[in-house]
Image: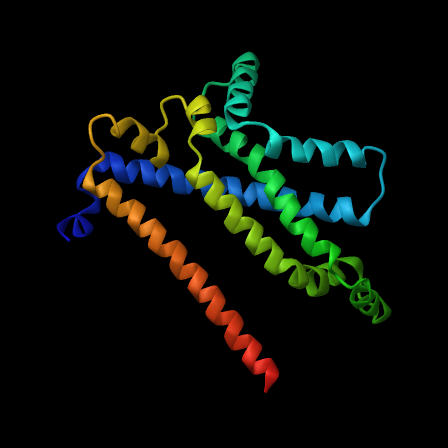
Length: 217
């Protein structure tokens, strides 16, 4: 268990982990905000480019990662962007956005519009209706989309490899280290991430079961 007590004895491991967490958090925040707005717009409003926007959002999900990564790398190069943290975040937002829209869109479609109409009947303005009625009802879908987005960003290697330059993320570190042997500290971090994911799932299931039993009483 000594490696669990000295996870950062190899500084490169923790540095790579920190980069992955930072990229995942920023990408998730941007993708979740944009994706939620797009999901609401696609379900609630009619506009000329609606079909085109729908198609554009599904393309990253259907495109092989190696094609998407190489295409974005070429785009950044032609635009004069040096590969680094910024290009990684932009690339991650590009493919995470589609998953956020699909997840939140499914939630928006299940909302009962009569609840929002009731709020307007009680003289709530559009902002109050959104924050006091719509947003709380959408929150479970938004949280699910954010968790999915973060896990996709944290785990991504192929797109990151094409657009990272000298920045090393945790998956990239594992790939490079595999040729000479992955250090035990990296396995400790990987195990910790796996255990954390299990704990989140268990906590969610237990919370849902407790809530269900309270409603039945």
